[in-house]
Image 1 (cartoon, rainbow, N blue to C red):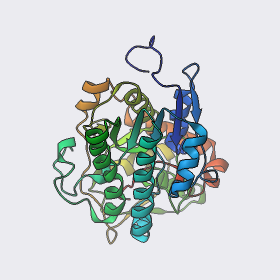
Image 2: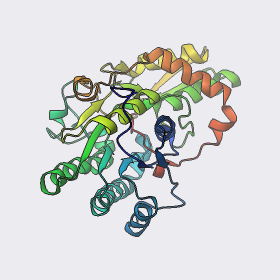
Image 3: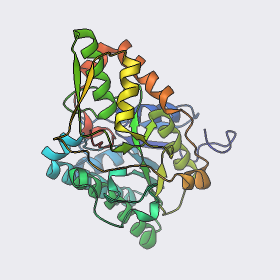
Length: 336
């Protein structure tokens, strides 16, 4: 899992915000593989991380020496357009207050999860970490992206002034088994999988997809992302932001073709060209992650997509019951 499997994980008590969410469950599972490591993954019902007093109580009661901050209020393009103020305020307040309280409580290290949405709208591909400030993010998810990017500013300034060890990671769009398939809050892959499966079963002649299909996205299998974060938590101790991804993107039209194939839907795809595509392209330059903490994604996209479709087909009751629990879950806003 980390560079030297014989070495002990360098922390004893870990607080994972959003630890019961999609990505969080994979990270918590990996952390539990280390002996004598206490892992805390509270729910929003226990601590509201927008409330400073709840954050203070959480840190006093769990006494972590490492915090991995995954919790976020997020959604797809529609949710971002409907909730720009909420997404900005709640994500900003969670991050700013958590880092400050962590510093005050003597936490040894803070791992902050950013988002690919923080990159400027017209960033040249592949996105390099040094380009993160070279323009304004894509408008539909800019408030969310900027709120998350403020943790990078805080992490770097706190390292400079206080010597506080905080790192900032920028994951690509996540997917995989256990994703959120709720049609009101899901992102492009689970949304299209559900549409195609339901259309196949109902005998519908077509499904609709937002945009033109010409935008591209990079997708990272959720367990690969968990591996990267645990590696970085154990090894990486620098202020430079780090991309977490595969280094490969795919056109949304090609993604749709693969989903149609794996779900065995035989109808027509109708593109809603009146709806926005979002950022034109997203592909990350990922060499820094390998150089700094030895991470390289392992799961090929088609294999990961096939696993995701199979999981959904086999867990329809569970997947259909998933509600919008995004306030304690890390996700990435997608354009579709």
